Every structure is written in C-alpha cells, then in structure tokens.
Length: 145
Image (cartoon, rainbow, N blue to C red; front, top):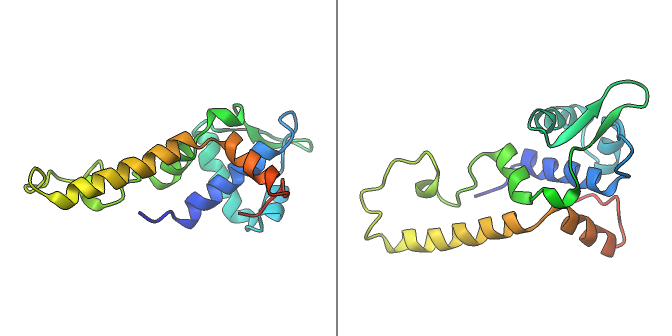
C-alpha cells in the first residue's frame, strides 16, 4: 500500500481545518497557501470531502469551508479510505480481489493479514484531534505535512 498524493493532501486539508477556529470558514486560497498546494488541486479534493459530508461549505464573501463535525469524530482511516478506496496492503487482501485458491495454506497471506490489521488499527485509532495536538506540540499549528 502506498498512500497517493491525493490521500496525503486530503489529510493535510482536514488537519488544516481541524486547527482552524471551528466557528470560522476557511477559503480554499488560504488553505492552499498554508499547505503549499495548488488551489485547483485543493478544490478537487475539498469537493470530494464536501460530497462525503466531511466538510461544510458556505458561499459568499465570508464563505469557505470548515469541518462538519468535531476533529475527534474523524479518523485518518476514514479520510484515506474516502480518497484512496481500499487500503489493503497487498492485492490478495483487497475487498474486490478474487478468492485465492491458496488462501488456506498460504503462510505469507497470514503475514499480510497481520500487517494489514496493524496498519488499519493505527489509521482507525488516530483522529484529526490527535494529529492537531501533535501539530501544536511540534510548535507549528499551521504546519505543512
């Protein structure tokens, strides 16, 4: 499994919103500037996040984007699955993979399952609130990840 640029940027965008004032809306321009990512790419990603209900949007001069829920309600796994799809570490564990005829006796499959479980456990345990706290502890609340 390799997290794509889109997945990494979606996580950065959501973290940026988690660090912002929850009562304020952030413009794509300001998020893109803080994260050093093109506005056009940010717009594509934020559109997907809005459609999924992760982010709220308001149009107009005072409009922009903010999290739909508190940062502790989002996990890294949710965000990455939205942008990446299946997070299987190897092809044979993907949700849409055909049944492997060797699955029952395959020792390496056991290893891949252990690795897959470990990765997903971490991604499903780490929340945006946790990432925001790490960012604050590192002294850069508007960090570029």
